Image (cartoon, rainbow, N blue to C red; front, side, top):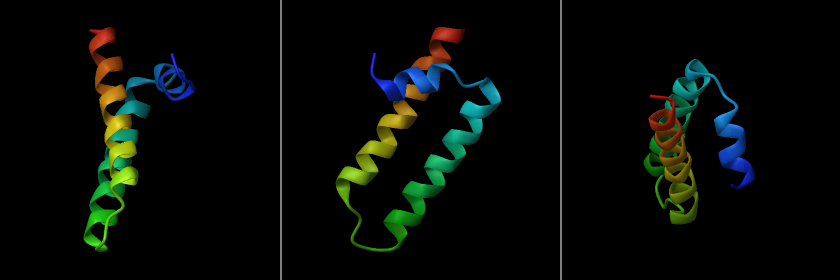
Length: 59
């Protein structure tokens, strides 16, 4: 498990929710600024994917 996944696993449900909101805002503002960097957007999407995986484990 990589460091990011470990850190995500240590967050509370509320912190995960707030992180998803932040990541969605970051993607939106980055893309809206024009000339988005695909690697940045992909990394942010990876964070959302890791959070989704973590929430599924907690069910």
